[in-house]
Amino acid sequence: MSGERPKYTRVLLKISGEAFAGNGTGVDVATTRSMAEQISDVQADGVSVAVVVGGGNIWRGKVHEEAGMDRATADYMGMLATVINALALQDALERMGVPSRVQTAIAMHQIAEPYIRRRAIRHLEKGRVVIFAAGTGNPYFTTDTTAALRAVEVGAQAILKATKVDGIYTADPKKDLSATRFARLDYMEVLQRGLEVMDSTAMALCMDNQIPIVVFGMAEAGNIRRVVWGEAIGTYVGKPMDELTGTAGGAR
Image (tube, rainbow, N blue to C red):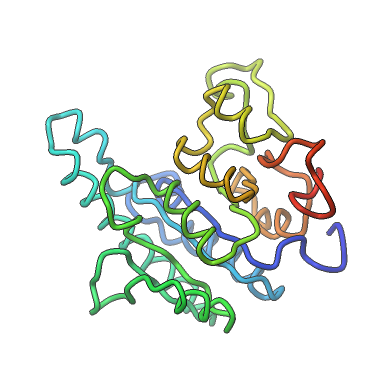
């Protein structure tokens, strides 16, 4: 690792719904366990970990909207899908002895806590992993926006976006073999280039609050810990190099 202490002491991990499916559909037990193991390793280092999960492995609202479904209805169904993934991750963590809490933006008291900012922060301070589900509780907002919002609210030092590829590329590396990976980008570059990192609302929120985003591949075991300890993997999105001062947004 790059130093004696982690680079970040509180992070928000964004996991897409597709990540839960592994190579199949629904929730893959082995894949979910692998994600929980990586989170457990980081939590054992004394790092506070909050998680925002997507629901695309269960429900893709956009597909149904294009088929004629009401957008708000499709989005609410997607929010419910994220709760299933959150509960699966919580179960995997707690079977490893890692205390965790699921907080939902839509009240469902029998299975999860309602999202309360102060309570979430207190859980993090006590060493619990907090999993945020049901998006923001509002239609028309993505889980990327949820990740940016919750990161600001709980004081996360960075958003770690775990994906199926190992960073941000100039083009889809699966379709264009000449595509190259960016080592780092600033927020405006992402918006101007139209790169699919996070939606524009989420990106603007991160830019306004100077929260860096690290996009990296989830498949390789130990990658979350590598990012937390400051290893130069994936793509770093943050302030331009000439604006960096001290350790803020640390240079790669």
